[in-house]
Length: 343
Image 1: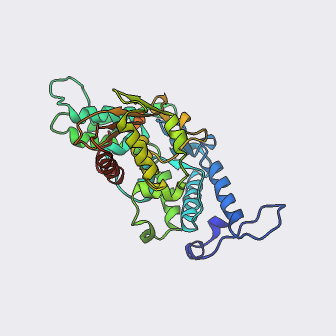
Image 2: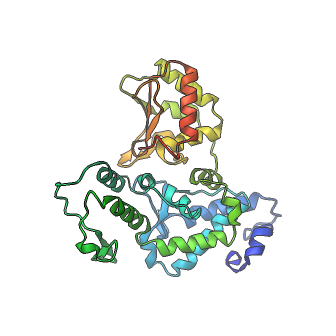
Image 3: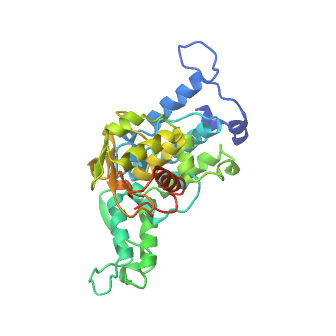
């Protein structure tokens, strides 16, 4: 395909012209938009083995360890990276949503423990428990090694040299968690991810994306679908005393009405971990263990900030005393969600 044969300079500077076989007409943008949308639907489809759904849902994807068995996998991932880059440079939306660690990999940003929740909520919870509890005298018998299945063969892999004989203690557990995080993020996909990132930067000038964080890059690549507020409200559940007619809930929906669409998408990112909405609408939202509707729970004090539980699609909303207070706190949570409030 010409996309792989073109030079970096041509890919960045030249205008794209797309022609469909058997169809006449000039490309004034429509065929190109359609081409990238259709191509992304196939290229990033887990059915073909390059990518897989995250452990938490069936609409965000990530690089699949099974892609190691796909013919010419490195070139396929380099091609995928170029497609992502071209879509970004030429402002074409893709029919694909990726996990937060995927976007961070594209930006060459380090991942944190909280990012792991978007990839594997259960694994994230186990490491979080380890971080927050004193493991002295618990008899966990952990070492700096992991057991992994490679092509049907179970092998023990050391997280550091001599790791099999190094016990995990309260003193060294921070290093263990960091190494486990790195292993889980890169498990069987490090070479494929590097090829994809290389293809991406063969098209994109690194200075162009240096201004983005992972959440912003997601919105640029996957688009800002117009949110149907009526559908959102119809498919929202309430807990711990809240209900649709509760004053705080009335203010909540007033705030969402006042938000522009980008802020609504950021709120959705904050609570569910992604700005993507299933094709069937909010009724089809999924959590870490199956269908899970958007939920608002009464929690905390009126001085607290809202917090989110992304694996349960739940927003913990304090009982604020006025609309202005709720709007201010909710806006702060949405704008600063990369630094606090996500569990």
